[in-house]
Length: 311
View (cartoon, one colour):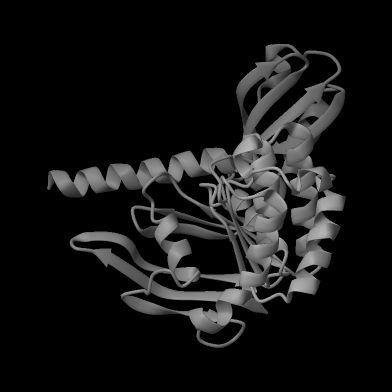
């Protein structure tokens, strides 16, 4: 079941098409990566999903009904890349205030603030002003402010910005825990290694258009180039490697990267090594990274746009 469904969204600014007919679904409890280069239309999409902007065309369905920004905003938590905290305000008072803005009664808000401050070991920060905190500390406070009201949809834009590895891991584990408990998460970042580690599904947009979307594993399978790494105990001579089943792409230390020919199978590849009495120590398929797919697909659309402009 989907928590959010985006259907043929369009948003134009004068002649600029910020979002041009984009559709995708976000299943409940999933961690969904919203990807694209600068100026791709991601921010405009997020602003429509949070009700800040209204689409010129298309519709958004939230929990199986048309999205109503006034009613549904309390079910959304949004942590923007730019920190939105009041610098002169005390940390504890500010988080308590933001929780009440999201509809929590004062007593319940105080209990939740105390719980999260204790969990993140920041109870001693209550009377500090935001401007007295480091960027990483501010990020932890902003994360807590975003999740206090238990949103059904959590939007995180570069949530690890300014965090050291320990605190980044702390936030990452909370993201996984929230997802397992049923929270649906939109995760926007330029760090593709984080996408591979965290996201179940992604959508890639550029110049207002959707380039691809789907499950991370399925997308990597779609763009695979039939490359394999074969580890060998003894480096074979050239004659032993000659075969019509694959082409040698690269030789490594006690390993070969090979490209399997279209009419051959992985069994053919391994049988060749066995018949040549070459000891195989390991065997793995090399799938493209999300970073590689991102670069390739964005560059293709950039080339297409240039060709259209030239004509």
